[in-house]
Amino acid sequence: MSQGVLIVAELVISGILNLTAPALLLFFMFKRWQIFPGWYMIWAFAMPIYSVVDSWAGYLAFPDSFPSLDDAFDKETMRDIYRSVWAAAIWIPYMMRSDRVANTFVN
Image 1: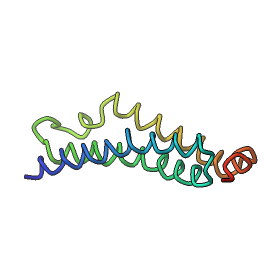
Image 2 (image 1 turned 30 degrees about the horizontal axis):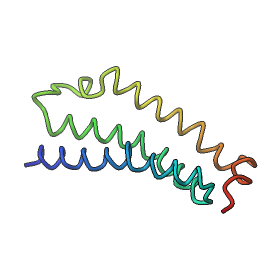
Image 3 (image 1 turned 120 degrees about the horizontal axis):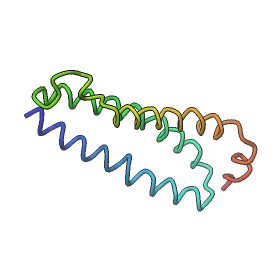
């Protein structure tokens, strides 16, 4: 039961964060809507959190596939987490402080 719930939740959340949100963010960006920087910051903050929680939930739901926590957080998973953390660390402050961002997204 918990494995099925995890798989469905993974598909829904992953679809939102990896497909729907970027498409909406592109739309907001090209329209130069004022909501773009805020929504982008939320998305950039959510991505590393999702990666960590997803790997941890997979470890708990599939103990046969992941005998240790190190198996759930393998090299590729850690690289994705580090990338999303660095992206958030760079782009969130830029969105908050940049005059260019403030002057572009005014509609």
